[in-house]
Length: 307
Image 1 (cartoon, one colour):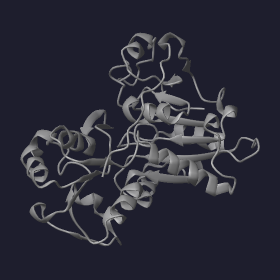
Image 2 (tube, helix red, strand yellow):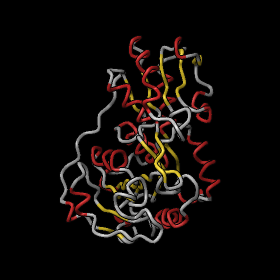
Image 3 (cartoon, one colour):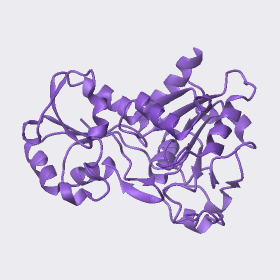
Image 4 (tube, helix red, strand yellow):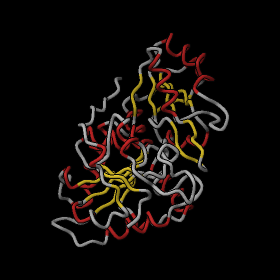
């Protein structure tokens, strides 16, 4: 198992990156929006109503050869129905999107390539639905032939350092890992919470074999565009007509750039503190200096996803 790599993004001048007040002015350029979920549609505690409304308005635009579609692309380590239930709970309207694609869905496909696998689940019990219906046996760490990491057992107090001994034992036996969520951190109630990507990075650092399911890796974008094509029976849309929206440079923006699709960075997400918009009354100012320090750049920046 080897991890697909995200290519380096082409250089863009930070001073030339526009800051949008809404997406209305650019929406007609696109047939498909690939929209991140956590950090864009909700913050882990409350849904962002204007974001859902913006996606509904986009979907309502007159088609230019094909209908306007929205696919939610999430690094959540659970199958899409679980994410939909969460969105329902936050009040995100189902009219805001056509489909959901998750890292959990891709992880299930990867596990299915190992029929009869003896799997150790490294992550919280709430992610257990990722294994439902698959040909595998869940076992303890010492008996595992495959590790599926969905997160930390307790992300409120643990760090990747708490897993050093367990990871060393897996590495000594050459046990491969599937990372079901490449995110390093996610925002929850204005705090950054560690994710499975930190565990996977620690494992890779000591020579462990890791394959990642989700952004910024190419297979998730291929799957999303294929899904969009299947919705209309028209094949995948042109990449120039696809817009990726997200709040993370490392995943949302880097992945879009590597795949060759335009991207829009939402400032009020995991980079909110760096961009000076952590407080409710803060306003996004000139971000050129911050962008100049980054290795990858979006095509545009917006404080929140709004129409």
